[in-house]
Length: 365
Image (tube, rainbow, N blue to C red):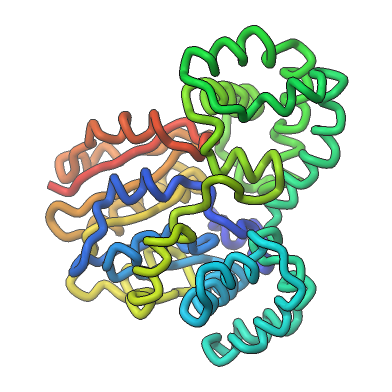
């Protein structure tokens, strides 16, 4: 069986941001000085969140483009003040990003330097907007949202992220928002076909059974009712194309300042996460940020990778990972070595990155 790295292309940026809630992740993994973590790199945001708490982090990715993105973000954080970084990355307007990138080249590896020299247009447009997944949401805003006036009035659309309490959000969604036309439009745009070709990759759905759109619609309902819509950075980005009232954890003032001081604690590795773990095992790891990597593997491979990671874990280490569309958990023959933590359900209930169907936290005995 070929790995997902062989079945899908990884020569471009798929995720310019991390689409898992770093606040939930940090609550699960408890990063602190003296602790070591193995992390899926992706857009870098959640690895940065762990480093900001004083942890040493080995961040791995199959994509050199993703690691070039992490390097560029790290260089900006190291050399620029927060407001400058917000402008450079694309949260704030700027017209000098290419010049700023040239100033940061001394902090980049040769490979990352070449990548950004060849992709200066992406730098100029703001790198946090340059992933395939972010482009998918851009299509949502340009192709789907213009049709919302046919489903809801403009006034109703503007009211979607208005501040309300739980009862108010439920009432607005049930009585005003959730009509037949909205559900039909959602099912078309977030279907397996559309997401596979425009947002993620068809190979990422290889082990998915059942309707993709129905499960995402259920989670969208959760986000618009059970979670505070007025302070959800992921919902903000989907609807507006940027982070507004609330930013990702690594770009908040206190976290950013701590991260700048601790960036030397981040090590990058090109390759599978289990390979990175073996290469940088040291005295083992206190935690694992695994994103949703297991659902891109068949059940047997997922179990094998899980057991490899267990061999790298210190006693009391925690594994944190999400299921989006494929159920994955500790393999049966390893259940005597770990215990599932009940706090996962409480954290999942407040997870602002609402796409996922489950959040799992397990602790090594």
